[in-house]
Image (tube, rainbow, N blue to C red; front, side, top):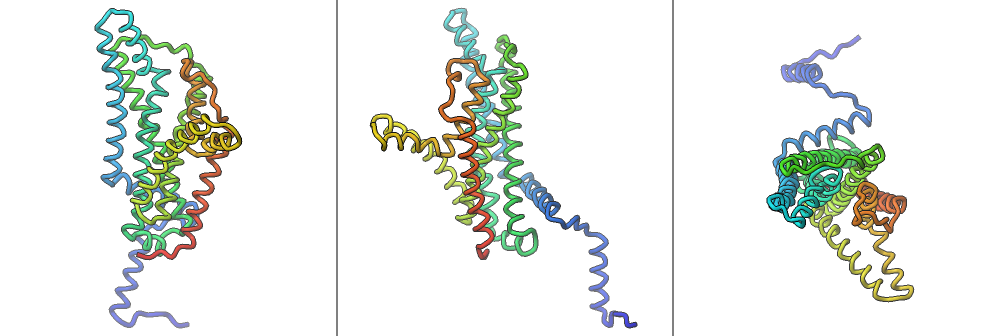
Length: 329
């Protein structure tokens, strides 16, 4: 029986290095799910260390807090007067600072600013891999192409949930503090089990809306192979979609016939319109005010189906491009 005995000094050193590596490096489980979860953990670690993530977080929190302070200024001014009109103004603004009314108010602010910030984040973490050329190294030494894209999707989902929850908690807390300074009464009679259920659904619809636009940014960044494409493309889509929807609805309303009906129906199949409908429908169930009590024209089932179709298209094309593309620098 023969044994492989190192014959030179270099071979001895090489075997010692291999032995040291095997003893000191923990590779972890190599199954598909374990690799995926470790990759997501690595992405989250990189985000925690990046300056961009910290800047975006500070901007989001600052805008929510400043918006609440801004809405409280008229209330503080009105609190110094005993005029009935001023007291009514105080009551109206105060209702936006405490539950249950503050949830939808803070939610609308958080949804607006978080959409912009998460689009920037999504475009950066996906397109940045192409811009810096690190995707070539990752795919040659790390996870598979499908795992790579699933890692980005999982990371964006976690960031979306953390963002909306943190912004809502901070907003509700700051609003409650401002309401204490105004000495406004809090009516919790409507905050029953049904309200809590709709509140959770409302938060989920906000998260769904934010997550959709991160998927859109991922899709465009994958096609364009750059951060600029993902960020600019998603932001332009977000802005032009609402503008196009308003124009088509206005044109369809001032005309009659089949064409008018078609123009008015087109916005009901745009993703932004359906995401807004989901949020509006939950706001209707949360609020008893006249402005929010009107039923939505688009049902939840219709809106969810439309969103699923768009997400399936965006992700399907992204996976196909990722699998078939020759990744080079």
